[in-house]
Image (tube, rainbow, N blue to C red):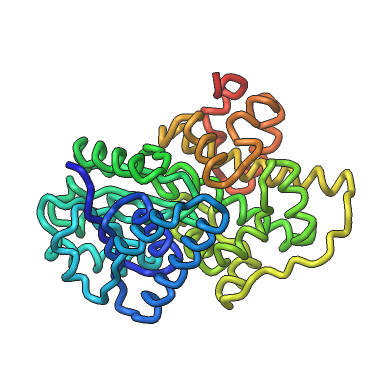
Length: 365
């Protein structure tokens, strides 16, 4: 089945971004939200995006006009009745999403595909709320969704092969790079991105570095374009906190740091002040802690066959701009150095050393 009519529920940052990109890619797109102000804001953001594209020569004026005509907004979910694909992009709360899919199951055509844009919740847990769960899967976009090229295509236990193939074709047709992964908390990318940002907050909690210092060391140690505190200020600490809390079933290593809880709960952003400057010993400790916090969850997801090492690195590079993707970096450092970074975390949080550490040195080959 070709997807020609897309429905998106939720006109927040993610839903709006998905809609803006899909309309530009030639898909008839319907954005639904009960908040009319959000719909107005989404259309304004679409206009800004298309106008900037025209100014920079990336979008032809005729293409922008066509995209504007394809993007429609309404307040009622009943308008989804004729959609081929409906993507849920509401707040990352399990009960809210479950209620949404119970309602969508009554509205959508039986042949329509239903998808969740959840960043961390398991698709299988949500699937019990979907009539005909074989048509249900995860389509996890990354922010900003109108620009970021990666989409995790998450297959639940009951998702049919036909649904997966249609979703893969749709993501490619809309200019995205799909990463097919197994259903697991955090999937392939947020499984390590959330702990990376969380460990950054722990370092500040333990007074091992300032936010600016940790950001600088992270850029050097992992080759990220933007440090963990700066990137959280973009996506909002409140949202990142909620995503990390959804990883709680994975164990105590994934529990949120005090600083992240405090800033996220307050709906604030992190203060990033002056960097005290390089200090060889402190910088090395921060780098090893950050690398370990990335390596441990990556090794765990490799044990669980969530995704291949090559796909994990591809996701890190495309979605997060990691200049030193985790599997390639582990291979470069070698098994002994990786264990030196991971073993203290395993001891601290009472988890076994992942067996995939034995593959370090030849993960990417």
